[in-house]
Length: 267
Ligand code: NAP
Image (cartoon, rainbow, N blue to C red; front, side, top):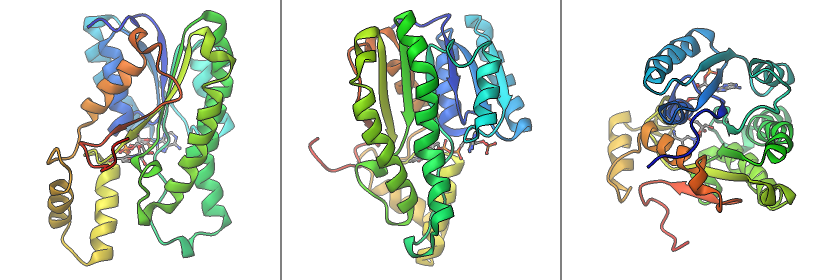
């Protein structure tokens, strides 16, 4: 299926590896020009080189901007890379890594501010900077990478459960504002368990909390997922690319769960 977005410009945050990289890869394969972002310059440059190799077939451009997207300076840097103050992006995938695991009794105000900054306020700033330009041009797609923890909270991920729920509430309102009638959609894509470095870190934390071997925890987790396995970043990217496509124009304000069937509810 032609997704109808070749030649558009996308900002994909947190894209040197994992789910963000999966999204950038899927978009590049559709001929979308991407500005990818992460903090570590070396791994970002390596990721950009891999994407550029993929882009040869589609002719898409790949620009890498090493910056902390949770800072004003970082956001200014990614906007400058596309030639303007954020108004030139047609597609924005927000993502900034997840907050640390732990016990809620140990988190002070600073820990909460950091989590809210990265997983709620940064996506809101990116939305604020880009949607009006998108609406003026009559096309825009925002996809926020959040978490299945928004639907089914995970005990050791309290910072994530809380901060991302704030973003989810904001998106529910903003997506249904006047921009909805001007070709702009905002959706949240909720990963369950995908095999990335982030998952490895949370599995390791769960294993050490339970006094178990990492491989045993991985096996047990996968056995509990109806699909019988973790998801791949490539599968996640394909869903993201569809949400960014012209075909998904009538979907906005939704929370799309990709979890191999792990969430047990009917809705
Ligand atoms: P990952 O493999 O650790 O990759 C995170 C990416 O984000 C890296 O490219 C990282 O590069 C970048 N990043 C982190 N902080 C950043 C910042 N402040 N500014 C710019 N880039 C930043 O993580 P992932 O598994 O892809 O997860 C992506 C998101 O989905 C996270 O929020 C995670 O909590 C959430 N999630 C993941 C899963 C899962 O199963 N994987 C499940 C639920 C939710 P640098 O470190 O170089 O900046």
